[in-house]
Amino acid sequence: MDNIIDAHYFLLPSQGNIYSLSKLCMCNGNNKILAASLRRKIFSFEYMCSDGALIPAVREVVFTYIPSGAEIISIDSFNKSTSGDDFVIGITIIKVVWLLSGSDNKIHVFREDRVNHCYSQVEVDTYFPEFSDIPSVVMWMDIRYNEEHTQRLTAYGCECGYMKLSVVDPQNREVITSWSARFAGSVSSVRMFDRYSSVQCPSFLGKEEDKLAEDSQVNLLVTSTLQPSVVYMNVAQNGLNCSHSLPSSEEFDAVLCSCIADIDMDGEQEILLGTYGQEMLMYKYKSDSWVLSGKRTFANPIHSVLYVDVTGDGVKELVVLSLRGVHILQHDPDIINEKLLRGYQEISNHDESDRGSAVTS
Image 1 (tube, helix red, strand yellow):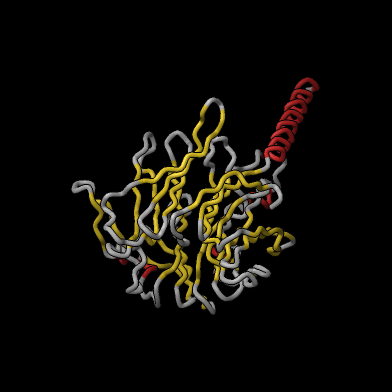
Image 2 (cartoon, rainbow, N blue to C red):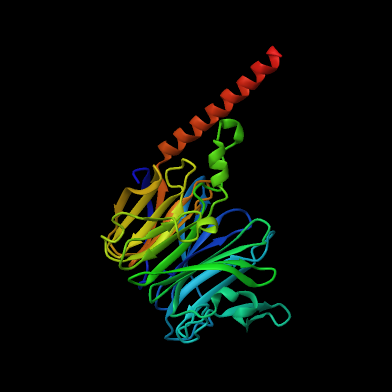
């Protein structure tokens, strides 16, 4: 992680948790960050342009409907519009108990009622039959659809250490097949991801055919609070039969959060783990296994991590929520410049080669 440098840090008035960080995707392509603290305070962070310079701006966002004395448990948000900024922000607080995962060991589904401008609860089995018979409180879940939306992959992890992966037919609303595993401690996160980043390398630059095939393979990361984190490879085909433990992931106290990001910008995704032991661990896939390729120490336990462009310059930043504040980490500008020049040179060389071929023919 030597190519990542500190860019900004701001304090929170009280601590957050692993569900306290969210991003707001603006219609103009920029992003804001929402960070919630336990005692009813929510802050918006963004970079604003002033006289040609980017200035970090932090302000409190006031939600008048949060009851006095309530504690914020989680926050999430999305933009309903593709042409404007029409945000829906969901806040889970102790007094209101508006939860997707409830203490009754069930997943609750709320559907928007456009006529009455509200959200109402519907039966979970109507839309998500894979969420029946959950043994304990769900700590984290992840859902992935294929491109035609004819198949859905659903994974969730529970407080008791139970983890389940299901393949679902969303049209007929039935579970095709499922697998489960049991971990020693609570499952802190589950994430489905591709090995390669969504920004594809142009085919004329020589991307190998085997990588093209692997682009469609979905892998599953499962982090545990007591034992090593595990990656299950190509779960749609292999289920939970092809697994790789992440070395040393259990040596820094509990793993609280995870993030999938192409940190070194080589087109392949890395795995980032945030631990209570104040270490961020980075894993890279090499020689058919995941290896620990870097780590970084923070001053406090790490609760949540995002990899998102908050400066609006086209390069993503690493946003880390720790026990006492939010860290903004940027890529080294010299490394970014070097990679841009190298990519430009490759494209220029290819164009010159094409022109030479045309003249010859």
